[in-house]
Amino acid sequence: MAPEYKVTTTDMPFNGRPKPNDQLLESLIRDNAPPITRRASMPVFARYPIALSMLTVGMVLWTLGAGASLDGWIIGINLISSVRRLSDVPIPLLSGMIQIPLIALVGLLYSCNELFLRPKRTYSLSTNIAVVMLILLTHATDVGSTYLSVTTLRENAWELQTWAANLVVPAAIYSVFLTYVPELLILQAVKMFRGR
Image 1 (cartoon, one colour):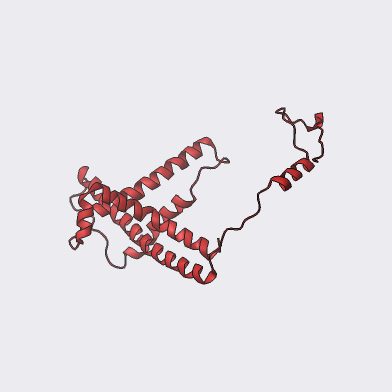
Image 2 (cartoon, helix red, strand yellow; image 1 turned 30 degrees about the vertical axis):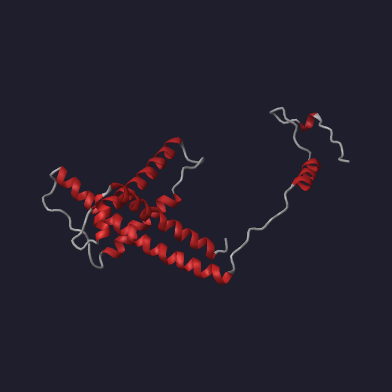
């Protein structure tokens, strides 16, 4: 038989509901709590090779996506300068070793903004609005610059690239894929290395 608990006036908080007695709360948790089940974990000998594979694929795709964003920015600047008649000579797409630090810089800037930039309660309203606008701008320019790069054909483009560049939906899907999937793979690989 369950013990009886009396609610006194001291147990009434400001909203008029009785505050649960510690003993009552403990008995409810003990009697009604579902059995603790542990999530089946992947064996270590399988987890690390899978995590390493995900990290490798994620880093390769991340490099491709960051390179596409960099190319897309150059293409976008050329489009704006031609529309506004700022320059008759377009900026050439980068090639060679100069790309490597710029690809890393563009990729890190986008990834840090997309992963860590969040509105917080401790910020003022105007700061939160600015953060939300920056988040939207980051995602829009990341996908948009990748889309510009995907839809701009090079001389030695593959047949698949030519097909995707001429159709909006495949180009958009490929742009979104290159923008978000690499980071998801890398994050999941890090979690698996940590044993989560």
